[in-house]
Length: 254
Image: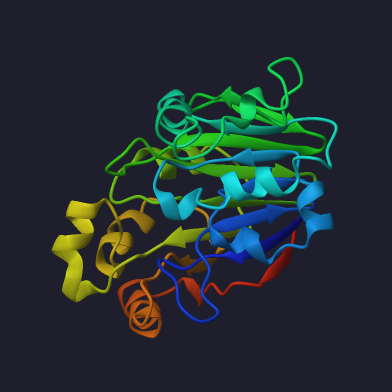
């Protein structure tokens, strides 16, 4: 299984892209601005999009992606999300005012995009890959994902702050090779992190003691200009763990 980080920033700027992860060549987790760096041929290969939540930085390029491949694909791109996530996209984005409803184009019987609800705690089998949706704690309904194949496993927190569930779920399994973990704010902005439903380094440290695995940990969703500070504070707050800064363009083979 190949994992390509298209975007992992908590904002935009030169060379910064918002959250999107490409699994092999056919599955996206989130569809932030990093999707825009894919070629048209790469976009055509995407069959499934798994969303973590409804905040714009995590889906903003989904409408543009579907529009770009509209005339090029024969089967709909399936967009997976919690019921409230799908409902919000239908109500506020694909509503003919902000963007056309591509779940009904070119026809309702043969659309270019289809929505499929998924509940936290359930899994989907995609070839030899198993994708599990895991509820997390954000200011809107949010989830992370655990993705496993025969040769490896990674997990992605999505946007979240302190809670037990994500870590309890990961602990049920024998393996975890890689953890992509959001830390949006430095410690000086911990109060803002709590109110916004995000981690700071000290807040993440409180949760990582719950994890029995020892994966390589990559810090994502850092606010622009604060990346080095946040990663440095994570290494101080979380000794004994392999902490790295996640960068757009990074690829992993699991």
